[in-house]
Amino acid sequence: MRLSEIGRLVWLNLVQNKFKVFLTSTGIIVGSATIMLVIAIGTGGKLEVAEQFKNLNAGSIDISYEYNGSSFMGRVPGSGMQGGMQGGMPGGRAGSGMPGRDMGGGFSPFGGMENQMNTTQITLSQKDADYLKENIPGIASATISYTTKQETEGGSMEESVSYTIAGVKENYADISNLEMAIGTFLTQDNDIYKERTCVLGYSAAKEMFDSVLEAYDSSVYIDNRSYVVSGVLMEMGTVASGISPDEAVFIPYETGIKYLTGKEVNPVITVVAEDVNNVDSVMEQTATVLAETYGENVEFTISDAGSKMEAASKSNDTLTLLLLAMAAIVFIVGGIGIMNVLFVSVKERTNEIGILKAIGCEQKDILTEFLLEASCISFVGAVLGVILSLGITPIIEGFSVRVELSLGGGVLSLLFGVLTGTVFGFYPAFKASRLIPVAALNHE
Image 1: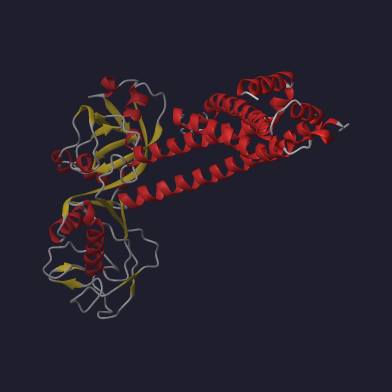
Image 2 (image 1 turned 90 degrees about the vertical axis):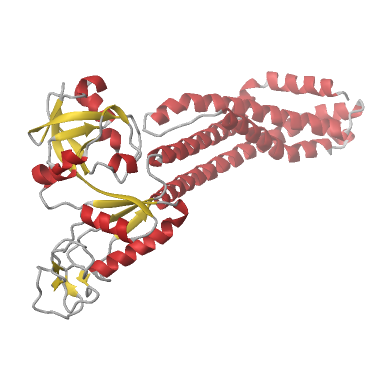
């Protein structure tokens, strides 16, 4: 039997049973739409992770200390006391030039005792950052920053809104790869003289002034004090050292200490390794220097950009795998549905199969006919599934989920759909091809 004749028989069977074909392909429709959306969501998630961290220098390392009220101080090497005087610096490192820290209230009457309770918070400073840069080989640059929430108002805003205010040094922009849309970033003089000037993130500028140009050289009010806008950042859509630049307002570090936070801040030191391959070594040396300075029992959080990106990527990969597992289950259910319908079809068309065999059709012809039917049904379902995924995409994006549809995802969905129908349709087709002609003709 010629392939064209088999194709005509398949076409007639499908056209005469349109509703049954649609119902049979329902599982494939859902499966195809699911797998296309899984690929799109997975791709969108990867791009989102890449964008979130694209402005982080690959060699950047964040160092912070979080006071929990229960930390213990170790003995500062070379001293006979904790928090006492050493080399003329309270709690400092002899001859190191490291600034002293108020760790336990200054001079301790319990000199020489180990594990004294740390009753005050350690506050890192730019001097700490400079000390790390000077004493650890392989560090290219270092800066310090902190964030706080403050009521901010400006431009066309009718009422104040709480914004993230970032106190940063002049080198923060270079370390975090921030680019200016207009104006200039904060300068060292701004910080030294505690000037009330600021740089707005792109989204913050648009929200306050409706345009970047209007925001430049205007005034905003942070905690009821006016600040001159010296510049606006390019749109980043990213995160740097825990800060979302688009939504933040950047002010000089010391200005924020004077007018907003006082000394009660919890800053983050960011150092950048000269060679990304030496990040682990720099982290180990940083931990060693901090332990020598503050004591073995004072714990700092030290994390690098690479580990943050890796953690985010792993979370995204886990979600993608879960969605793929769900898609596979849906496909299996759809395949079983096709198998059941074909078994019923074989039973209903037993006499037809007997006639085809009686006029000379071979087993391979019957097998080919039923396999083509299964493949066509699944192909129709896969096409409808792709169309369905296109319709669902705007709804998913409405929940702030990034979806990146692609031609490759659509093709893969079609291939999986056809493959599922073919695989699950093989056994019913094989059973049909094995029917004995006489028995099939006499079947009622």
